[in-house]
Image (cartoon, rainbow, N blue to C red; front, side, top):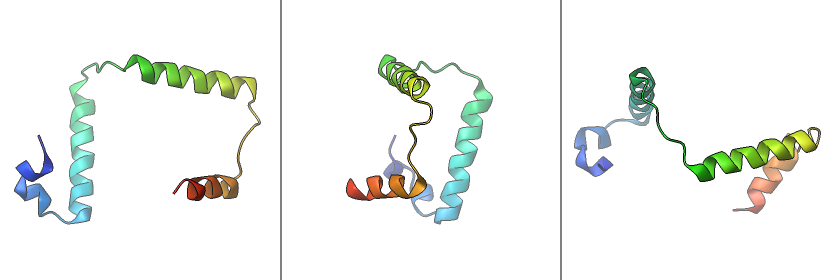
Length: 73
């Protein structure tokens, strides 16, 4: 399904679209269906957690984080 397939959604304002997305997420959560997490995602999270545990104080300041993000643009 694509956004263009639902013209009523395309015509919504940004705040209305945000509310719609919130309702969609809530309906997904309420369904209590287990969604398989891809193995690659689990591996990446495990790697990040291991990195954090081995260097818990190796953090960026907010300013350094902003600079790093800007340099990637």
